Image (cartoon, rainbow, N blue to C red; front, side, top):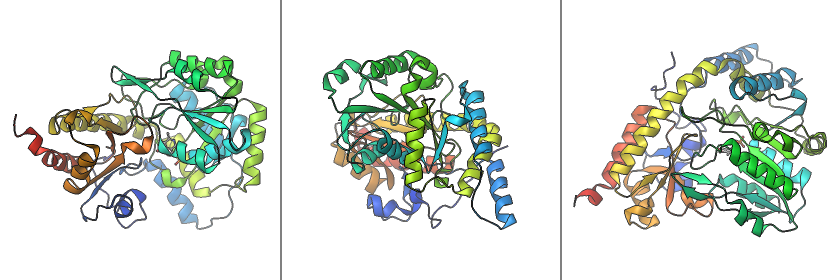
Length: 395
Ligand SMILES: Cc1ncc(COP(=O)(O)O)c(C=O)c1O
């Protein structure tokens, strides 16, 4: 029903993923394959394309009014897919999650305050904290049985009087760890004990593989609801990142009021109609597409993990319960990180995300986006096999 094998030419289409390769990676080969930024090479769900086409066909593109049906579509999606009851009145649309995080920082913290993150973690957390003159407080994750864990005792020892807020990534990017209800509850309780606001970025919540299940932080710790702000979006799930629409929601009326005041003060209380139409259509019509996508991604994940571990003896893939972003540790190959990077970028002409971008714990790793049609993935895996061939010659 959905042809995820279809290769769509994205070069020359203002695609950051494809058209920024040379600028960001230095790889100038015309056949370079991008496996970095988290967007997919698949066509959006047909219902999204139809909704956008209808808008284009009408030909009038004035200001967008009334976010009511959009917030209702979001609430219905969260109830259906995650069993979470979201009151549409809790929801503030933002031009994406990262901008939402910046607005939350501005609304609820002061310059110089500490923001807790759990590295290795999505690099834009660091960027938006620093850009807002707040300080990063790293609470390094530990690794056991192929998944990450939070060390709250170690974090407790690091807190300062200026620690105000925690940015959680759930499911976690990179590494694909799906946090258990007990882990989420422990974190929320910790936040209550230390009077911290908990921001739960759940943008990857729909991209969870069979065998794992996402628990919204609000569900795990309803007693802490008043200190939780949740961020979600249709853009990661349905490949609409360019639409730049996200949602922050909280049942804390004071937080919501302060966030909305920031949104008003920055002139962001008027919305991009194409983004709103696309994301509403995705939540309303995209379910069958997503249900078909997940097994396709799972197969890509399994292929990539097996082939990279075979290509570069000692390389190790983190067990990925969520996200389409494989997190590969090359420490066991005995190669220096610069040499691994040289082989992948210059040898294989593949641009993954460099591990150090994600902060402490990422130094020996690369993150590979495998949300691409299988013919492209196969080409990439063949090239990686070639790039590490000499490592296997003595076997
Ligand atoms: C954890 C996480 N949050 C946010 C984003 C980006 O959100 P947006 O494009 O809505 O700013 C990403 C993109 O990869 C992500 O991985």
